Image (cartoon, rainbow, N blue to C red; front, top):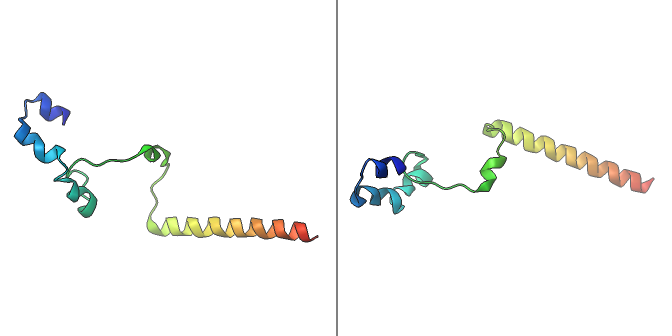
Length: 79
């Protein structure tokens, strides 16, 4: 947007970019260059991009670790 404005783009040229008309390409087609898209502060928390397979394996491992921790806490209470 800044580049277009600095190059003297007219409001007619900017309207498709700023009204959200092109955002459907971003959200529904995955075309990140298709329009303006937003992200929140949480984007700063992303440390890695995993494949779906890696993500599922990580979630399963974390669930197992949590389950084992809970089991050990229950066992320690019983004894």
